[in-house]
Image (cartoon, rainbow, N blue to C red):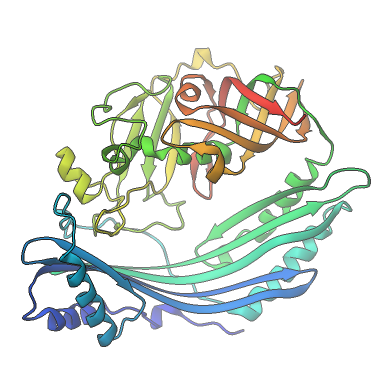
Length: 461
C-alpha cells in the first residue's frame, strides 16, 4: 500500500519564505508587504461500472503577494512559482500594480495578525495512495448497486484525499502556519424502472483521513434516498406548510449570507444596511451563529486569509441581527475588530465558515406545534435544493429553486415528481413556525429541522 506520512514532508517553510522576501525587498521602494501561500498534495479517483474512469495525483502551490509602495498604495499579484525567481517576479508585479492602485480604499494588516491563535485538534492523517483509493471506490460502487434492483448505475462518484498547508506572513512579523488532511467520498446513484422517469440522489462524507471516512454510511444513505424517490407523484401548485431538512435550510441561509457580509453591505449588494445591527430579521425563536472552530468542521483553520484568528460569532440572536462578518478593511470602516472571515486581496472577500442554526432562549416550548416524527398535518418535506447558482437573487432576497422532497400526508411520504419552492428570504424567516429540538450535524453546518408556513410550491405542469 503506497502510503506516506505528510508530517514528515513539509511543503512550505514559512521562515524560509520570510528570509527570501526580506532579501528581495531590501532596498526596494516597498514600505510593507504580506503574503498568503498554500500548497497541497491531492489524490482522487472516479469509477464507472467497476472500471477506473479517472485517476489523478497532483501537487499544487499558490501564493498571493501584496505590497505597499512609498505612497501607501497597495498592489497585488499571484503566482504558483515558489522559487526565488518566482517570488521576485511576483513582488515586482505587485509593486507595479501598486502604481495603479485604488487610493480610495487601501487595506492594511489586520490588527489581530499577531494575536494568539485558538487551538484546533485536527490530527494529520496518512495518505493511502491512488491504488487503495481505487479499490475502495470500486467496492463502494458494487455495494451501492446491490442495494436495490432499480439502482442501475452510479454516474457520479469520487473518492479523494488531500494534504494541505497554508501560511500567512507579513513584514510586521506575523507568521501563521497550518496543516490539514482531508478525505472526501461522493456517491450519486441513478435508479430506473420501466415506464417511469429515472430518479437520482446522492450523499457526501468528509473526514480527516480515509480511515475515518464513513463509507458504509454514505452507501446506505445514498441508497435510501434514491429508493425513497421511486414512487413519485406530481404535486398541485399552492401554498404549503414546509419542513426543511438541515442540509436544505443551511444551503438556503448560506445563499443569502450577504445579509451578514460587511463587504457586501459597503458595496450596496446586501439586504442589510450599516445600521441593521439590532434590527429584527426573523421570528424571536431563531438564532444563527458562525463557528469555524466547531469540532465537526473538517475544514477548520485557526486563522483567515489576513492572519486574523478564527472565532465563533453570533449573527442572529432571538431574531435580531447582532454582528456582521468583517475583514480588516470593513472592520476599520465600522469601527470594530475583524472577525476572522476574510480572504487575502486588495479588496478582501468576506464569507462564513460553518453556520449553526439554533433555537434561541426566546423559544416557547408551549407553542411547539410540529415534529417530523408526529405531525399528521399535510406538509412538504424538502430534502435538498438545486440550482442555487441560478435560482437565488441574493441582493434582492428572492429565490425560486427546484427541490427534491416529499409530500407527507398522515405520516406517509410521497416523492414529489418535480417542483420548485419560491419566496423571499425575509418573508421566510418571519414565517418560521417551529424549530425542532434535535440539532443535526451536516458536512457544512448544524441545524434542526425548520418548519415554515405558507411557502409557494409550483408543481410541474
